[in-house]
Length: 95
Image (cartoon, rainbow, N blue to C red):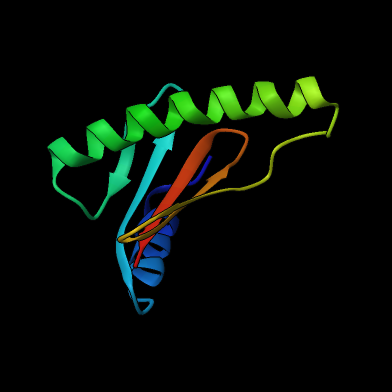
């Protein structure tokens, strides 16, 4: 699992990219580990994206496509990029 200093460094590095509006790291149960957004928004996004990742993984499994590595959600405001790992989910919002 990603640790303290590595986590903070990763958030800082990702958040510094042009156009990045927010970065959230959540565990596989949807509980936020770290974020550069306010607590309320972080909790809501973490819970919803975790649920979505679970559903997307089931779709990929049902299709026999192997595993799911990445999910991109396009919106009028930009995109939400989701990278599920073994122990956590990385969520990056940019636009």
